[in-house]
Image (cartoon, rainbow, N blue to C red; front, top):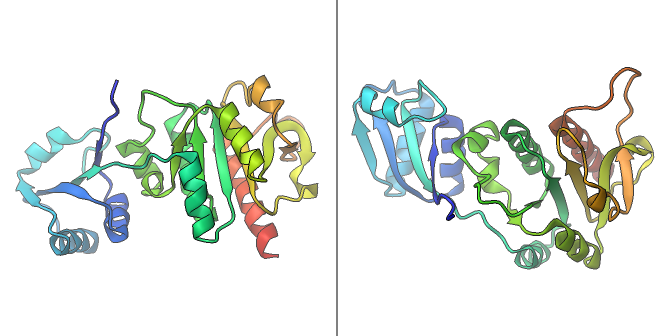
Length: 247
């Protein structure tokens, strides 16, 4: 089954960020009765400057197009091309003289969590997210809206996770598995090229992936709390790595 190439962006914030970054849009729908707030004005100006067609339509017509929102007055149709080969991505990272830093999602299921991880990953300098191959496109209007556009701005690699980890290790990356039985991240050196593996919301990291990590890391918690939400755990560790790198 082929993946959807055009994504309907229904968030003004995400639409604005993507336009500012120069992403390609096929067209933008604007409700004829739209209130011209500053964000809408900038969206219209950027689209005009980039020669993106703006179609003014009745509010009722636009509302029938909406999938995840009931109130937006601006909708963009964007061509999604965020699919990377891991080897090509590594070459790009090295060419830009950046340090490889990856997030590996081992069957993380919920859109809210995936999008939140994408947003934090982009903010902390992660330069690639790796997932299992899937017939379902991880980049949707919902992930773009929740991640404030980060879902289209951070490179996405879909491949066999065992092969990905093997390749990352060959490149000298240290592989950390986020696991409740790991060493407290307070005492772990997270600096340098590395990848964090995050497991599914219900079962955590799979046994096969856990056997391939270089070190398990955990987040200390008060007695009575078994685990944190996976996106929260990811955020804690990504920001501590950032702290360690700049200290």
